[in-house]
Image (cartoon, rainbow, N blue to C red; front, side):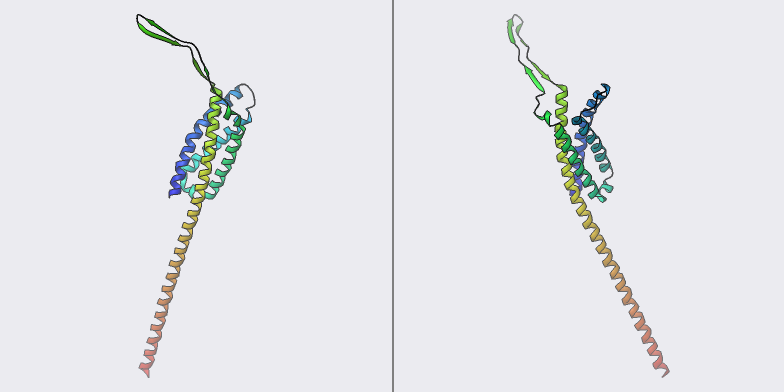
Length: 207
C-alpha cells in the first residue's frame, strides 16, 4: 500500500517535470525543421525520451491496477528510461557549465533638483534564451533520471508484495479445500458405520 502511494507520488512529479521539458525541446525541434536542418543529437535524444516517458507515465498512472499486476514489466521499462535519460543528459552535458546570464555594468547617476532626488542606472542583465532553456532541460533530465530509478525500486517492492499476496491466497484456498475434503470423508465414514450397524441389528433381529 505504501509503495503504491509512493509510486503514484513520484509518477506525478515525473509528469510535472516532463511536460515543460517536452515543450522546450519541441520548440528547438520546430526551429530546426523550419530551417530544413537536422536536429542535433543532444536535443533529439532527450526529446524522444521525454515524449515516450510522458506517455508511459500517464498510461501507468491511469491504469494502476494493471501496473500493479505487471509490476516487474513496468519496472524493467522504467529502468530502460533511466538509461535513456542518462544518454540524453550525457549528450547535453556541455550546457551544464555554460553561463546563460551576462551582467553589463553601467553608469549610475544621481541628481538633486527642486523636485527631489532622481537617479539613472544604465546597468543591464541579459539572459540567453536558448542557453537557459537547454540548461533547464538538462536539469529536468537529471531529475527524471533519479525519479525513474526511484519508481523502478518501488515497482520491485510492489512486485514482491503482489507475489506474497498471491502465495497467501493460494495457501488459504488449499487449506480450505483440504478441510472440506476432510469433513466429507468423516461424514461418509459415519454414514457407512451407521449403515453397517443397522445391518448388524437387522441380522440379530432375525436370529
